[in-house]
Length: 505
Image 1 (cartoon, one colour):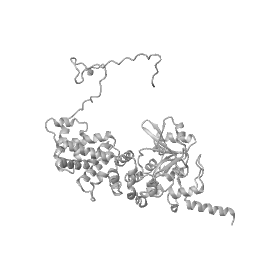
Image 2 (cartoon, rainbow, N blue to C red):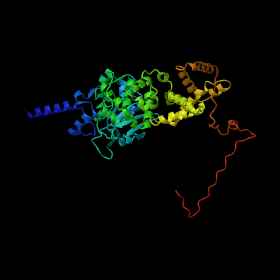
Image 3 (tube, one colour):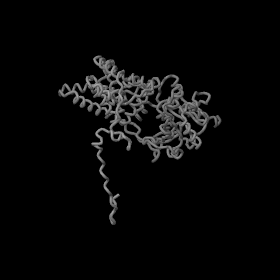
Image 4 (cartoon, rainbow, N blue to C red):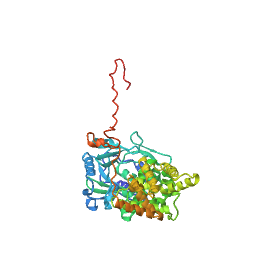
C-alpha cells in the first residue's frame, strides 16, 4: 500500500475519533496544539466524540442574520477589530436571539486580540474582571463586551495565562486564551456556541446549536457534572434559558442538577443577587420559579421560603407568590417597570408574617415591635445566601410596615398615608394579598375609590434647596423676616506656614 494512502487513512481516523474538522483558514496569531492535548481537551470539555459533530459554516445566503439587525455600536467594534487585523465575531445570546426572531438584550463580541491590545484600539475601553479579563467598550449607556478567545485551563501555566480550581472543581481564575475552536468548547450551551463573522457574514456552528434550536432542546457542552462543578451558576443559567426561550433541558444536562444544587452555597451572595434579578425580573418569573423548584435550586437560593412550600403548591402563601410573579411577567410584557424591592417584598412576606405571629404569641409584644424583629430576622438570614443591597431592603421594610397602617384610614390618616413615598407599592402589595385574604377586599376597594377621587402632588423633598437669590429662599419652613435663617460660621483663617516647619503629607 502506498505511503500516502496510509497517512490518509491515519488522518481520517484521527479526525473521526476527535470529531474535528479542518477549518477553511487558520486563525491569526494562534498555534495548532499538539495531538495529545487535543485528545484531552475533547474528552474533558466538549461533547462526546461519539457524536461526531463538526464545525458547520453557513454562508450569508444560508441564514437570516443581517447587519441591519445588529446595533451600530457592535458593528463599530467588529469593524475596527477586523480593520486592525484581528478576528471579530458576534457570539452567544445575541446570535441565538436573532435566529429566533427576538430582539437581543445586548451584543457580545469575541476576538483573538488580547485585552491590552483591545484597549489600545479603543479610547472608550475599560478592562474588568478577575476570574476572566474582559473589555467593555462604552458608548454612553450602551456597553459592548469584548472577550478574548478562551483556551483550556489545563494547558498553560504562566503569569498571564493561568487558571485556578477549588477542590470541588470550581474555576476560581480563568485567564487562559486560545483559538475560536477552544472558545466554542468552553461555551456553556450549544445554542450559545454560535458565531457570526463580520468579515464574510458567515455563521459558524461548532456543537449543533442550530439543530438544538430547531428541536427546542437545551444541551450542555461537555460532561454536565464537570461543567456544573466548574461553575455552579450554570445550573441557574440552564433554568433561565429554558424558561426564557421555551426550551426543554435535555435529559443528560438535567440529571445532575438536583444532586449538585448544594454547590450554589459556594457562590458569593453578591453574585447570586445579580443572578436572581436575571431569573425573576426578565418577564419569565413564574415559569422560572416552577423550574427552580423542580430541580431543587429554589431551596438553595431561598431556604427560609422553601420551608413554607407544600408538595401540591396550593397554600395561601404559594398562591400569593405565584400571583405576584404572574403580575410581574405581565408588567414586563407591557413595558412597565419592575423592581427588586417588590419582588423581595412578596417573596419574603410569608416568612415575615409567620415569624411576626410567633414572636407576638411567645412574648406578647405589640405588633410594631414583633414586626420589626420578624423583618430583621428574615432579611438577616436571606442576605447570607443572596446579598440584597440595603437600598432595597429599606424599601422592602417600608412596604411591609404600611400593610398594618393601610387598613386604618379613618380621619386624616388616609391623606397622610396617601402622601407616603411607598404608598403605591404598598397598595399594590395589599391588592395582591386580597386575592388570597378575602378580609382585605373591602379595604382595597375603599382605597381604589379614594385614589380616583383624590389628586395628590407630592411636596418637594426637604433636602432640595431653592436657587440662591430667589424669593423661594425666604419661604422655607421656619424662615421669615422675623426669624431669618441662621448664618454659617465664618471659616477659620489659615496662616502662612512658619519657616523651619515641615508639612506632614
